[in-house]
Length: 283
Image (cartoon, rainbow, N blue to C red; front, side, top):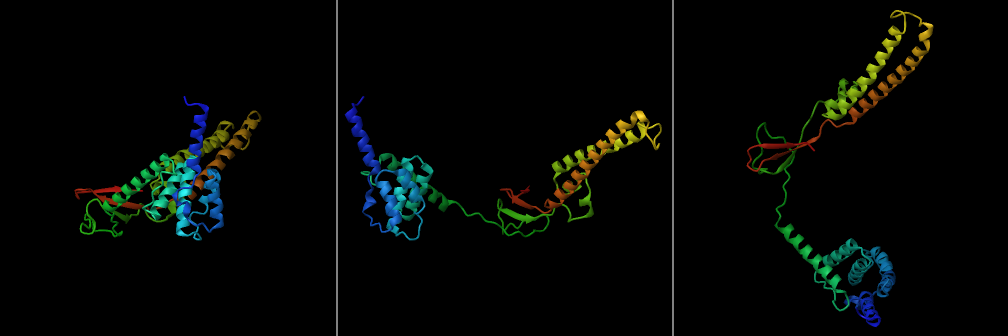
C-alpha cells in the first residue's frame, strides 16, 4: 500500500492530466463564450465545461480551429463526468471534421486515448460496410398483370409496394352496430368485442322488458302491476334504462370507430429468392 505522500502525488498527477489543456490549446480563441467554457475546462471544472460547450460546438460563429478545440474539450469533459454517449458524439463529430485527429497522450489520459481509438475503428468499419453494401432498389408501385411479376424491373427479393383494397368504399352497412364496420375493415378483434358486448346489453334490455311486463303482471300486456310487484317493476325499469343507454352509447362509438379505420392499406409483395412465388405481408 503506498503511503499518504505517494497517494497525494498520484492524485495530483491525475488532476493535472485531466485538467491540463490538450495539444490543441495553442488555438487562438476569439469567441468570448468559448473562452469562458474553455476556462472551466482548463480549471478541471468538467461539469460546467460540458454544459457550456454542448450549447456552442455547432455555432456558425466559431472558426474551424475553435470548433475542433470545442469538440475535443467537450469529449474529454463528458468522458470525465461519466456521460459516455455525449463523449462519443463529440469525438465522432471531431473525427468527421478532422479525420487525422489524434489525442495527445501527454495531456490526455490513456483511457480517453483508447476511447477515441475505439471510436475511430468503429467509424472506419461502418464506412467500409456502407461502401460494400448494395443499394436497395424500390420499384414504383405499378400493378403487374395477374400471375406475373415485372422480372426485368424487379429481381427476386426486391420489395414492390402495391396498393390493395380490402373491402369496398363506404356503404350504409358501416352505420350498423355489432361491429359490422370493423369486420368490413378486417379488424375482427374489435368487431368480435363489439358484437359480444352489444349483444349482451341488448339481450339484457329485452329480457328485462319481457320479464317486467309478463312475469310481474297477472297476464302479458296487462295495464297495471299488482301492488306487491310494483317496487320490483320500478327497479327493473331503471336497469332497463341503464342497459338501453349503454347499448346506444356502445353502438354509436362502435360505428364511429369503424368509420375511422382505413379501408385501403398498402400491401408489400416480395418475390422469393428463387423467383418462384410471392410472399404477401400487410403492414
